[in-house]
Amino acid sequence: QQQVKQSPQSLIVQKGGISIINCAYENTAFDYFPWYQQFPGKGPALLIAIRPDVSEKKEGRFTISFNKSAKQFSLHIMDSQPGDSATYFCAARASSGSARQLTFGSGTQLTVLP
Amino acid sequence: DAGITQSPRHKVTETGTPVTLRCHQTENHRYMYWYRQDPGHGLRLIHYSYGVKDTDKGEVSDGYSVSRSKTEDFLLTLESATSSQTSVYFCAISESSPGELFFGEGSRLTVL
Image (cartoon, rainbow over all chains, first blue to last red; front, side, top):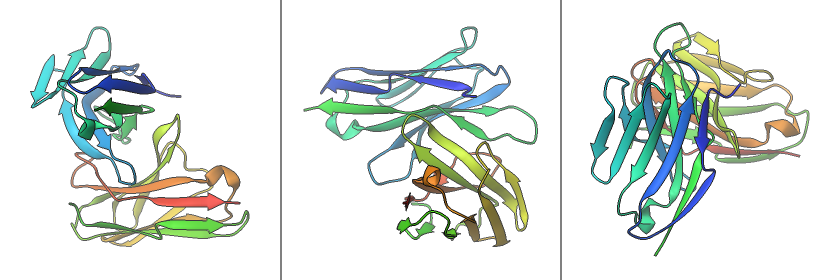
């Protein structure tokens, strides 16, 4: 059962454009929402994360928008660059219980054209 | 970069053979994880460890076992590999449960 649904599966954006990746979750007990970035042949690496007590977090060109009532969060990449071409995973963590593990979305392959 | 080494990085094996993947860390992090990555499924947790000899099952643990006899090493074993276990396997570590995950570079396993 996939508890975090990610879309789109793939995304092509022109250099300088805005890339938007969306995730929706079902479990209201999630309390931490990170995004991971993965380059080909490498392991994922933490890009940016947000907690549900804020609606937006910005780090450089990367912004997470969080809508608690809609149970959705999204990653916006402003001024997208070819170097941003990678696979992006959203994730969510349960706030309690023995299995406070991350549940990942299915990933979005982003291609930024020069 | 976090000191995580996975071995082997690539392996081709036949159905029914045992396979062991090794994850070695130099960060002294308490928590270690094994994930598999498959197209359309993202990253799925197989097993994790919260200390030496302390392990628990993840979302897709059937057909896999793990062992952690030392803080720095976490082994993933496929007792009898099947074609459905063809995947890229990632080891990850974290200081807290779970805080930021640091991933290794992956082990690509092909089961023929």
